[in-house]
Image (cartoon, rainbow, N blue to C red; front, side):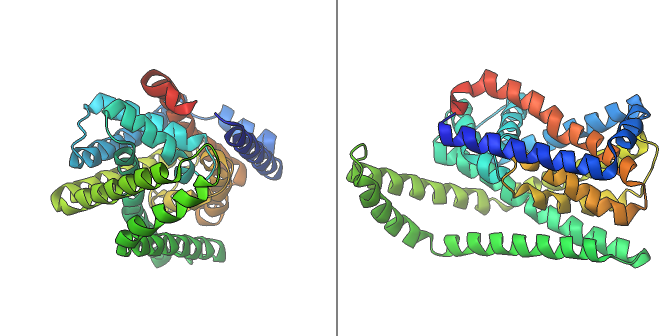
Length: 337
């Protein structure tokens, strides 16, 4: 890991620790610890199992996307590779945006594919996950609003998520619409700029970048043309989101405060908006967002909510971190140097 990357990771980790510390102080450390101490071990284990089911569902997504790109992987290998990709996302700032280059390097190494193919694979999984997440937010909020008034905090979170997603989708659509111009003009601009430095050759960079961009857009088109496979991929994404929602529901039961399964259905995808921050994997930000959304929607004490959130994040963040770190080391440690 190079100096700038190391500094970004240290700063992001420091920010996450500070944010978590503030959260614990506001809620009450003693009360959170007491709630965790009383948690049902069997239900905590069940939440962890659901976290593994989520990881398995999205690893099958990655396998299906890579299959469309003629990159074959066994189910166990896909699980290990996606776990490594999740690890990369969780240790780099800005979540998926920060971890995708590392994840792409790991995929290309294990799958013996071009780097841009690996990048299309992991980026496609991240983009396609947006479709069911938005659907769950609107479905969940709509069902919740049918029986309970939606507070300002939840309304603001929904509006923020919709605005961010709309901006991302617009940017993607714009780039795709003008992809030919991107391939034609971007290498011609980047090559001469980097050529000013002695260590770079402008012509080599321009030719290599043009080739990579062309392959990148061609691979995206291949993924999008197989509609039956695409439908299956989105279905796996939906299953993964529902496993996460189930994990949070079970986490609440574990700390002795059952909640309606409907609430986690829209709160979980909403909270991931906090992952688009300069924090490693959204650590600290997602926990704070979850607590902020769950306090007005559940009526449960903030200390119990925080304990449930910690159990949930243990299942979907820390457990994949352990598995993914081991997978990354075993499958492609050089990608992380």
